[in-house]
Image 1: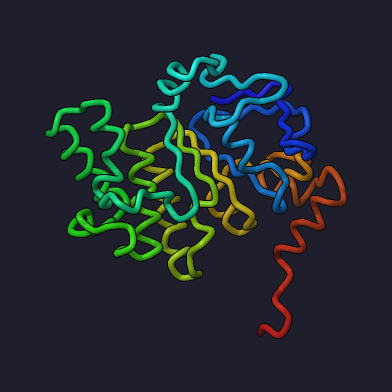
Image 2: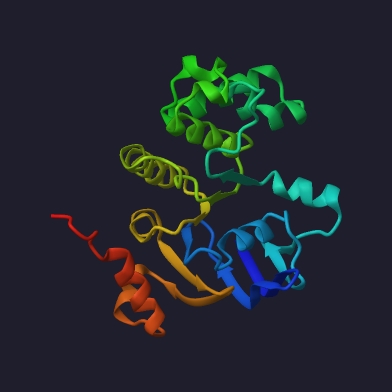
Length: 248
């Protein structure tokens, strides 16, 4: 679904991504994981055209992302994108946040209502809360609204950037279970950014471990554990699994 050929990205003096090649298969959940500042979010933003690579090119569904803004906007409608905290507009209700692009594209009212009803059922969002503003919703509800907005246009791909990072553990666990069920039900291509190894193992079918703007290793978590490409892979896994000092 995505092919990244020799892409790199620099922000001033900082090399965010070193030249890399990466192929992401369709219909699979791929997790981008690694330490803070390793380039995970930059990689995601290159995939949906919010950033342009300094070198190389990004192919989506076999075609290079177009350089013209109008053309890339049309391609981006095939990609659902959700951020940590939902990235919601505070002056719009939950429902208005979800159907914003559908109304911009002049979908018929009946189609918008039917899609909203389907998304409320899919994400287990309370329908009566669609009229509330983001400040009136819980963190978990805001994240469900962000997911509904990402799914509104029935995209081919879901790009999720730390979608559960700001939630408390109990809400996060519930949403992880819901997300896995949603991914299985929809069968879409999903690219998920996280720093949490347990979340990557629970949600991902394919793991891409990054460090310092480059890919260290990719495969299943079991493959990374059994056949680490370098010592960093083992250190990263062990650091995430180390029990908190003083815990039972």
